[in-house]
Length: 228
Image 1 (cartoon, rainbow, N blue to C red):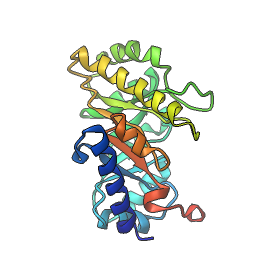
Image 2: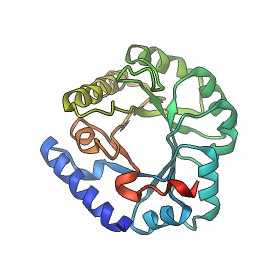
Image 3: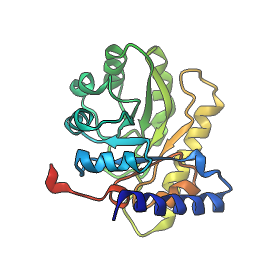
Image 4: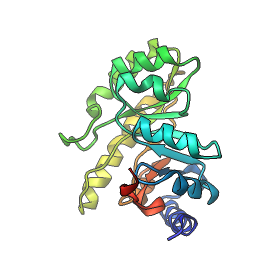
């Protein structure tokens, strides 16, 4: 299917989820995850009206930046190695995978202005996933005050890949509680207005539970993995 048609379906699904939760669909940013598609397909997403694009690897990001005519809002959503920060820092608006002080130090050093960062949280407790334990998030936020070029814009997580909807909801609710805790502290460097949670298989649940950013690859732009 064309990206425009996929986008319309997703927007309708988000509207339904917002209606259930008493939310405004305009609160939700749709991030097209372009890791497994060509620059041409990413351009098609932009032409369809997608503003936000997300990449998992620095090579993929730089490749697409070099070939896409427009200037979307770029999100780096994959695990970020400290040594790769210098490659992406001037190109991205959001980094979704801040999970350690060494990475924060490098981001702060390499940037000339505030970088919007989301703290990656392993809300499901799965060993295969990156991110801080929920109990460690508040302490980590407080340590980040020292970095003048970092704004804690929000939190990011990935729910377990399961048919158990309650498990998914519990994961997202943990994130919402953490966000509320951080916001209650009224930290100037950590407004924490964003919750990046929900992907192709669970974004409707995520929206119902308070997500403001959904990261959608397969359902929106598809998968052309043979391209890479």
